[in-house]
Image (cartoon, rainbow, N blue to C red; front, top):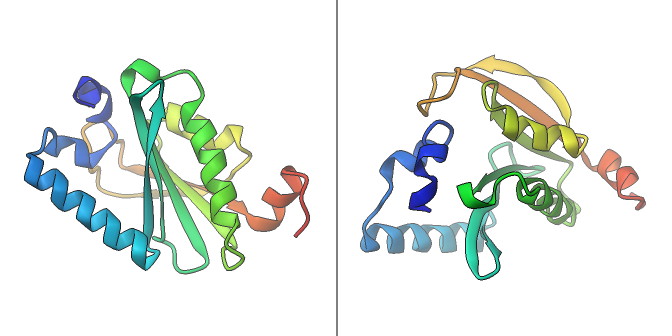
Length: 160
C-alpha cells in the first residue's frame, strides 16, 4: 500500500496516517472485527495474484436501510476495472439484505475516476453539498450517488 500513498493522499483522509505501526494496524483490525460483528461496516481486501490490489467496504452511514460503498485501488492495479467490479459485488451483497433499500457512493467532485465507478454501475446522481475538504486533493464539494433496490434488481435481471 505504501507505493500508493501519493495516489491515495489526495482522496483518502486515512492515508495521511500511513504508514502505521504494527500495534496501530492490529488495533484497526480489532475495530473492523467489532464493526463486522455489529453489522455497522464490512471491510474487504482486494487481492489479485496474491497481491494487495486495494480495499473496499460497506458502511452504514445512512441509517439501517442503507449502505455506503467505499473503495481504493493500489496504484499498480488502477485502470483494470477492479473498483467497478468490487462496487458491483458490494451492491449485490448490500441488497442481499432484504432490509436494505438503497446503496450510496460518495465522491469528491474533483475525483473523476471514483465518480466514474458510480456512473458505470448506473447509480443516480442525487446532488452535491459543500463539505470541508478532508484530504489534500478534495474540492470540498461532495457528490452523492444512489442506487435503489428495485432498480438494481431490474438491472441485474432479478425480481424484487
